[in-house]
Structure formats: C-alpha cells, structure tokens
Length: 381
Image (tube, rainbow, N blue to C red; front, side, top):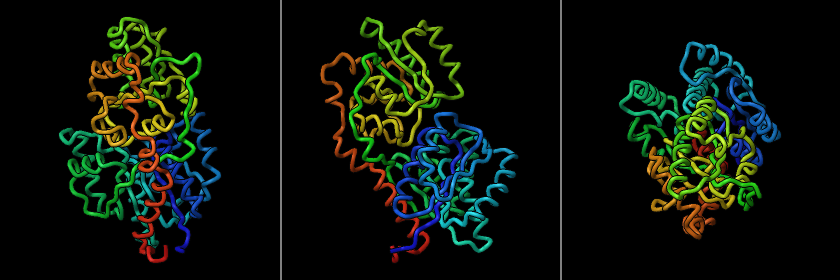
C-alpha cells in the first residue's frame, strides 16, 4: 500500500457546487486514510454554510484555513498569497488541489513556490466551469483564458468534471499541455432516496445561487409564461442566497407574481426537495451541476437548460431539456411537466446508470489515483 497523503483543497467561495464537490472528496479521501484540509475564502458564506462546515470538519485532519479571497483579480491577492504560503508551508501538503479559477490560481502558484523550496508537491486544477464561462471574444475572457494557458506550466494535472468541460477548455484555451483526466462529479449512496413532497408543496422550485448566471430571472419569466400556457395560477419557490436576491424580488413584484413565487434562504438540499416534485435548473452556463444529480437521486423531475454537461446526465435527447437562455422554451417544458401524464417517468434517466456513473466513491478513487501517478507513487498504491 502507498503511504497516506496530505491533501489541501483550495477554492474561493464556500457555497454551491464547488463546496459540495470538495466536501464529498474530503470525506471520501479521509475515509481512505488520507489527511485532508481546506483553504477557502472568509468573506462569503452564512449560517447555512457554517452548518455544512460542521458536517465536514470531522474529516479534515489538516483543518480549515479561511482568508479573504476576492472574486476578481486585485492587489489584495498579493497579501492573500503571502499569508496562504506561510500557512500552507506549515501544513506540509503532498497535494494542492485547486477548484475554480481563483482556487486553481492559488494552488498552482503556492505549489510552485513550495517546489522552489524543494518541497515535493502535486499541483492539480479542476475548473468547475469558472473561467470557461467567459466568451473567447470578450476582453475579460481573453485575459482569463491567456492566464489559464500560462498556468498550465505550473500544473501537474487537469481534471475535467464532464466531457463538455473538456471540449470547452480545448476550444477556448487550447489543447492541454499537461496530464488530463475526466472524472465526473459524484454523489454518495445516501443521496439516492426518494424524498416525498410536502402536503403544502408548490408546482416548481428553483434551488441555487441567486445570480444571473444561474438564471433565476429566466425562471420567473418562464413561470409567468407557463401560467399563460395552461390558463391557471401556479405556485413556485426560489430557495437560495446571492448578490441579486433583491433584484429578483423586485422583478416578481413588478410582474404581479409576488404572492405566487415565494423566496426562502438556502437550506439543506433534502429539505428543499420536499417543497416540490419539479426542480427547475434554468442556468445560462454550467459544467456538471450537483443540483441535477441530487434531484435525480431524490427521484424528482428535473427541468433544465441545455447547458454544460447536463445532457450527459439527463440524456442528449431528453425532453426535459430546454434551449439555453430561452424562457419561452423553458415554459414549454414546465407546462408539459405538470399537464402530461407520466411525464416524469418518461424523462427520468436510468437511476442505476446515474448511480454508477456519478459516484462519489469512484470520483475520489480516480482522483487519488491521479495524485499518486503525479507523485510517482503509483507502484506502491
């Protein structure tokens, strides 16, 4: 057997899918005998995220380090890098695994600095969409993609979480010049259980960050169009937190929907799933969103935009997919979900395929194998 590894996961914001991904990896890697820690931002997250940290802390032998890490590149990054370097050096990691654009930047720069000082450390990066959401033609996209290309020289391994992400990377940044592997996001066996809807459930629920990239405004517009399509009032909930929450609340009031679309703060996902049988994912861009996998495992109907790797989970020809950014097409699918008999059964992918393809244990195993290969310990594993 190979020796246990000391693994530090670096990412910016402890919210959403990246945080879920890291929590699952940390738990599985810890159970496999490795020492795991987290380095992330101290400026974001609330009481809901604090509860999630409490869940994962028993698996974090290297603890949680939180420093101010801003979304945009700024002069404060120099201070963050210096503070991070001193903390990371004291933890003596074998692996620095960056998630998302800012986490990838930190892990690769800090890992390279440690190598200058003769530390043996593997530097890995999983994009989770992130910089790949930018257009190649925008000034910001050009800057970010050029930086990603440069950072390849400091990267020992790139992990793509779906085939869509691999194709996007090659299209926007170029064919990778370092070791790459595709490892699907995975959920644990305990996520695969039917979650019944409450007696006061609503027709549709949106669960996620309240920001334009995730499409809450499309959800509101599509909800109104769905009502007009079927000719009667409906009900919905938006569950989550984010920078644009007040904007969406105002939008609903202006459209006369304030009493039919409710808003609730972020909560544990199984509690949110009890609110409705129909989970709507109206994102403008995604990689492989956990909310889709979790909803399928909970036996919920998923209505989603055809973006990122969602079709890899639902099926390329799934009638549950709507044209990205098109509220009218989203309304068409939403209307079908509540008017056509047995719609969920006809659109639900094979649950055993979901269980085997999107497994947290497989995700963690394949990730650990990559760590060992980079550290040239594969023969001991």
